[in-house]
Length: 141
Image (cartoon, rainbow, N blue to C red; front, side, top):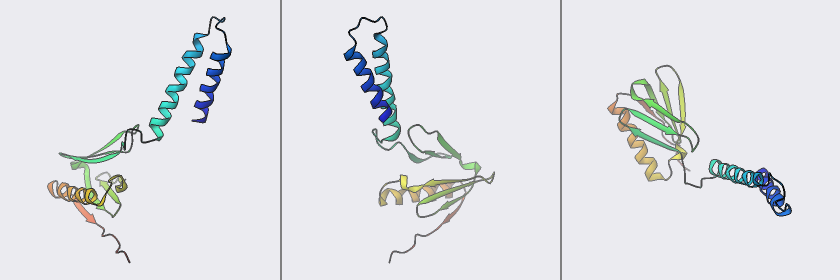
């Protein structure tokens, strides 16, 4: 952000201080546009301007996870899943190839949504005959 701000300030200074007698004066405007695009990219990438862009969803035969706006989707086919471990705040997916993927359930906001998500996991595991191991949360004292 600081670099983008310095670029914009420098470009505006060049535009204001120059009287346009150079042939390359239009390049100041081009650089200003690129600086604004850079700041926009940084803001979109680092701030949740458009809301949370991560999700976990169940589609017929697949579990789909997307970690953020510019991150690729992870797709887990039901026939490739050997077991699912459901911990209080984690979902661990073990594939037949012995790969283990850990998904953070903090992406699912709210206790009601989290419980609905747990029920979807149970239904998905039962429907596709996948071993489901649940770890109960520790009781609060």
